Length: 465
Image 1 (tube, rainbow, N blue to C red):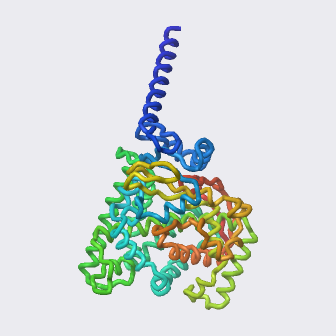
Image 2: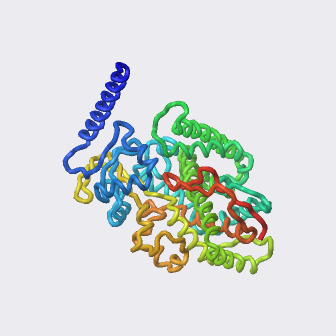
Image 3: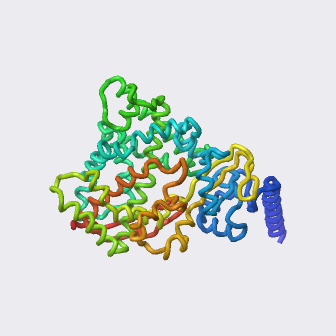
């Protein structure tokens, strides 16, 4: 009996201490003018609940506090906005007291020069350099031939195999981007580069706690290894004095035609940014498109009809060209509908550079604002029958230009690689649906937050079409 009383006493004492700590942390952030909400534990905040519960955490907080509330997630005091009009205002007014506010783990691992971390004139310089690499002219003349050559080879010999389409689309997105960045060396560095890159990706969305075994530590170490690989590659190219018509070649140009000259550190962070942003969206959208097309035979039939029509106009070995890409109207609709329904991107983060008023509240300097756009994708007033996979809703091009269309960001931070990503996914789908049919054979469970993924893989049995 005495032992039980001691255990009970210890339990009550721990409970009281936890309650006191939580109450103390709430009092720290109970400033006049802040929106309602909860802040959770010191240091950790509500990160665990946010990452585990995802959309349900957001819905519960909105039910309690409305569409504009405070929290503490990913190491930062944060205000979450779920209001469509306010979200658009925030994205369109970056210069007015707002700058990118990505988690510290992402800034540390992607680098201080990455386009998501900089602002003002530096952002303009970095964005200009990036846009020069992925302009419509560059896609048409330089990148699309590389994408087509890669996809044609990558999608060969899939007949009569059971494959994990999640793993394959990850490889596809990474290797395709690497070929566009460093065509000549992509094959030789891929085996060393790819595992380090996958560790880097996992580390970007983690608590910035630098302890052995954490995703943050592994991601940061992977960055250091990638810096060595890319540094050696740049040095080797500079010594050889050969010209290369790929992204790295254009970034390293030192002539008068290059209006956006970057340092080696900026070039490396630009390359990491291109790989990171393209990898996440292209791989996941491709995987989910395969999933949705399998589940919706009518959509697959319409998509295949579009692509078989293109193939009928070509010789067997003739590549996809710019005009073919522009004619893929239904394919573009499938990509948009996949991005909307799967919600590949849940939102974006901004940081206040001064105390500022938003929605009738005062947000302190240095706080993050999480522009949470996920719920807009399921708004029945914007998308009738929002849980249905219906690419035909996008055949009216006016939908793509609406104010609430934030799938690819908004304002000055709209994804600069949008059209390049669409070109990669479209080319992948072209060769996949014209060569193969498939059926799911395992791993159907999907997670939608914080990343869209199949925890046990997504297995399909592929046969020739």
